[in-house]
Image (cartoon, rainbow, N blue to C red; front, side, top):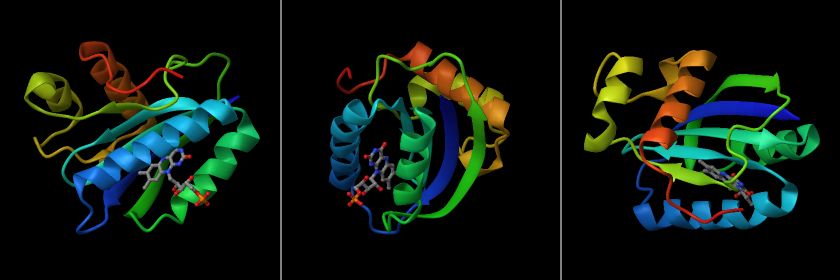
Length: 141
Ligand SMILES: Cc1cc2nc3c(=O)[nH]c(=O)nc-3n(C[C@H](O)[C@H](O)[C@H](O)COP(=O)(O)O)c2cc1C
C-alpha cells in the first residue's frame, strides 16, 4: 500500500460547483478502487493525499496529473505505508478557513496557504490536524 501527496494550483475560472463534482466523482471511484484520502482546497490551491493499493493510486495519480482543472502539479511525497490514516474516507474535503487559522499558521508562513512549499512531513501533519480539528465533510466510503 502507498500514500501519495501532491499540491497544485486551481485552474483559472474553475467554479466551486466543479470542485464538488470532482469530489463526488472521486468518492464513487475511490470507494471502488480501495482508495481513501483527503482533498484540501482554498481559493487558489489543491492539496490531496491518496492512499491505497500501489497500482490503483499510481494509475489515479496519472489521470489526475492530466486533468485540466488544475495546473502546476507538484508531487510532495510518495511512500509505502502499513496503515491508512483516512480509512473512513473515500475522499474527505477540508477547506482552510477561520476555524483552522491557527493550524494553518503553524505550517504556513503566510496566511495565504500554499501546499507547494510544504515538505512531506508538514503536508501530512497539516492534513492530519485539519481533519482532526474539523471532521471532514463528505460521505463515508
Ligand atoms: C484536484 C483534483 C483531484 C481529483 N481527485 C480524484 C480522485 O481522488 N479520484 C478520482 O477518481 N478522480 C479524481 N479527480 C478526477 C480525475 O482527474 C479524472 O477526471 C477522473 O478520475 C476521471 O478520469 P477519466 O475521465 O479518465 O475516467 C481529481 C481531479 C482533480 C482536478
